Length: 159
Image (cartoon, rainbow, N blue to C red):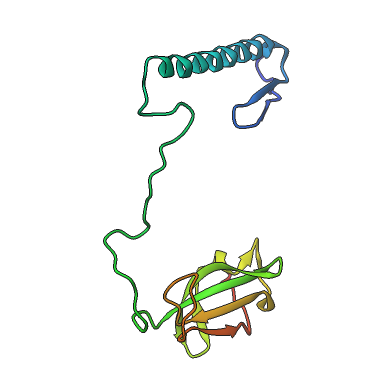
């Protein structure tokens, strides 16, 4: 490349990357990268096969060991009335209500939540698409204390 010339750049497609060089100088690099990728894939396949043949049974090649991870460690179940300020925000989508976010009751007609919960891009979600539930202590279980309310207005903070 001569001084003052601008490189046109590369297109990289996919997670592994299909490299498409736009400069003639880089075609050899492109071929070398493809060859390297082929060798790495072949080597990983050989390693998987050889690890199975020598009796390594702790891990299964290509599979992650599943481990349960709880969101709250050493927690206790909530009881009715323990979190009276908590509200659950749902959005109607495809004929069903889906959990969107949690919020906090500020006063008798205001719920405070994070901005990404009630906006799509820079626009507020329509109030008709949202509903609020209070008195819920488990996400997928209604009780005699659960109350459902509509949304009158969505106010997104300008910042």
